[in-house]
Image 1 (cartoon, rainbow, N blue to C red):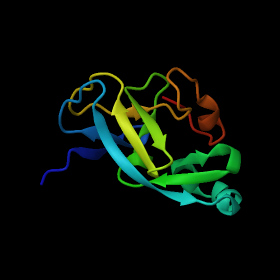
Image 2: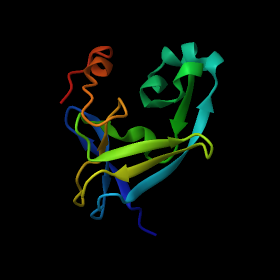
Image 3: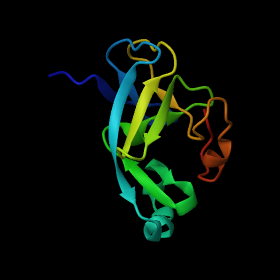
Length: 131
């Protein structure tokens, strides 16, 4: 069975997620189960590189989630071509095409969770120059 999604190195960004086929607006790209990181592990995890691959599960409770599959590998774009939705009950992140995405085009999300949010602080805090 051929995998639909794949990782590719991108100059200046590291690895990114791509699809072998065209995706249509509204199409589910991937459903990723998540591992819940409890609040008491928030501070220790914050001091590691794993924090860069985590999503808030419940921001108010300081719980994080680590997405399985390709979920933690999507790169940021201020105006992304994909969105994600956290389903807390099912403990899943659902990634969906926000627009038509051509085959072999990088699939990006907005790390702030909303279209158009300038999330440069995430990069500045890590001494990374956003592309």
